[in-house]
Image 1: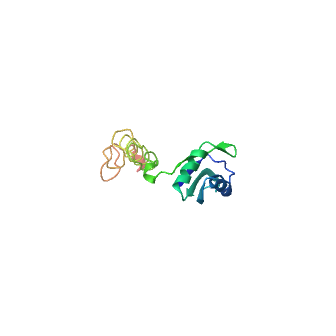
Image 2: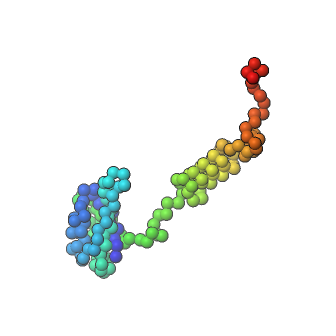
Image 3: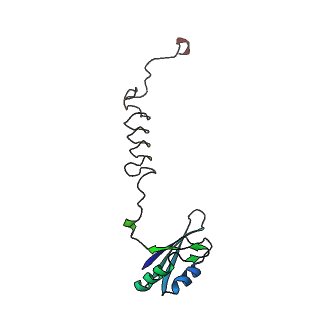
Amino acid sequence: MEIFVGNLPFDVTEQEITDVFAAYGAVSAVKMLMDKMTGRFRGIAFVTMSDDAQAQQAMDALNGKDLGGRPMRIDKTRERSDRFNGEGGGFGGKPRSGGFGGNRGGFGGNRGGFGGNRGGGFKPRGAGNGFKRDGFKPKSDFRRDSEY
């Protein structure tokens, strides 16, 4: 069984995590999540224990227990489908996002963003906002005869 362990101190080591869980059974693996940009530990780890009964006992005993001055948050790892899916926001997110390509006013949205269809946003040439289909044509010529 894989166990989520959160709220860990940033200076904790893999061996310290293993030792804490080893008191309840054999630990198969410990995966510590590191920040991609800084390479620093994020305070989150996944512990794998081969025996489900021992893993459940460790979860019950260690949830909220202090490690390095911080109470650990321990839970059973959920499948990816149960996790937050990141809908909304960002570039071209799901409906109601408002990001690039969303429908609430982002670039390409339909509520007034760039290329939108609810007014208030920029519309490209040929989109029915005073431009002719064959390109830019001013409605009146403001140049003086001497500028030709």
